[in-house]
Amino acid sequence: MPNARQLMTESADCVAEGDTVLEAARRMRQLGVGALPICGADDRLKGMLTDRDIVVKALGADRDPATTTAGDLAQGEVVSVDAEDDARFVLRRMTEHKVRRLPVIEDHRLVGMVSQADVARALPEPEVGDLLEALSTD
Image (tube, rainbow, N blue to C red):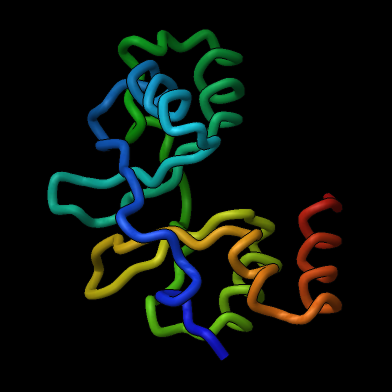
């Protein structure tokens, strides 16, 4: 059974907690991604920022994207997995929290990201189907 380190994309790009939402949106466009981890000055994971967060929590709430920071939008528990966690645990975390991407942590530092597609390649179809069903329902 592969672990998160074997599934993940290494060197995940971060947005700094002090970066503006506008800067984050530009980085997402440049990288072709819909979510970025938010990292603090200590290189520790502070949260996740999604394109939906930018639209709903910033633009939809009439907040200025040029002055609102990524850290301003970080909320709640940061859901992540350890680099040594096996693929089934990663799948359970994604299913329980209804997320398509998870930061991978080692020694409290971000080392990569594992996506729904990464897990789908590693596990049998029925288990992946359960994840897709969980992500598709409210």
